[in-house]
Length: 139
Image (cartoon, rainbow, N blue to C red; front, top):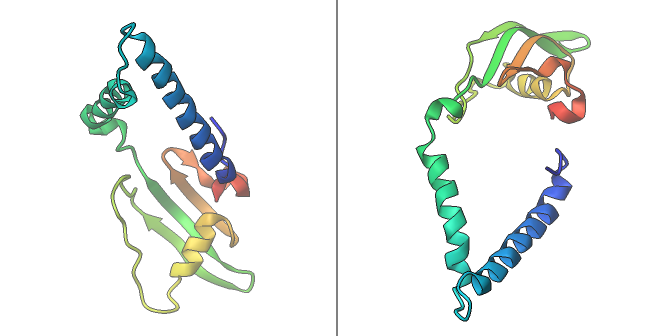
C-alpha cells in the first residue's frame, strides 16, 4: 500500500489506525441509536475474525519455499571466497543459522545475498530471482 520505503510505514500505520478508530467511533454511536457502544467492542468485531482467519488458515499458504541457493559464487575482485555453493531450499517461518569459523565466508555470503558484493549463480526467495532484482528492491 505504501511501497517498500520504510520511512512511510510508521506514518501510514498511524493514519490508517486513526482512520479505523474514527470509523469505529462513528459506528459505535450509530449502531444502536441512543446507546453508546464502547469503541473497543466495535474494533474487536472486526479484529477478532481477522486474526482468527490468520490462525486457522492452512500453513501451506504461508510455508512456501524460502531461500534457495544454487551454483552461487561470490567474493572480491581479486579473491573468490565462495565457489559453487549449493543450499537446499530453506523453509520460511523458521530460524536458520549460519555458523562457521572466522574467515570462512559468512559475511561475504550475507553481503553477496544483499547485493553488496559481486556474485553469480542462482538465488531465489519465495519463487523470485533475487539476482535479477535492482539493488534497492533486493536489499
